[in-house]
Image (cartoon, rainbow, N blue to C red):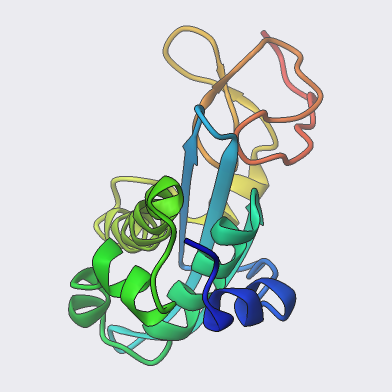
Length: 173
């Protein structure tokens, strides 16, 4: 199965590419088998997604899926956006080849992860992004963790292998 014209359009001219610096929620997912990595950033006002952006490292299908998921989610309430499924994304793209269907899972998962991150921040379970910027790199539990995505990183690693951000190391161990 070849890519649909919609997939090709979203791959060649992706919508909403970029990062929301003061995002209310950030979702990151990846597939170690194919190497696709997706980050979705959301801005929320009155429980509605007023802005959704993405940064994706991956194949054409992964980029098209990321572009489409941002278009589908923007303007929706959090509840409506949480109901977007991988099948919805694949259908909106006019279908995906069977070996690329996993990309639609990544898109829906990244969006849902960003919403969950927002809800956790709102509930005080996770520090807000502005709080993370105040402490460049921190040690919690055993090991070091990225201040941006909260994933464990190698000691003194210059960059986070998960979110790709540079990790400042002005801290005591």
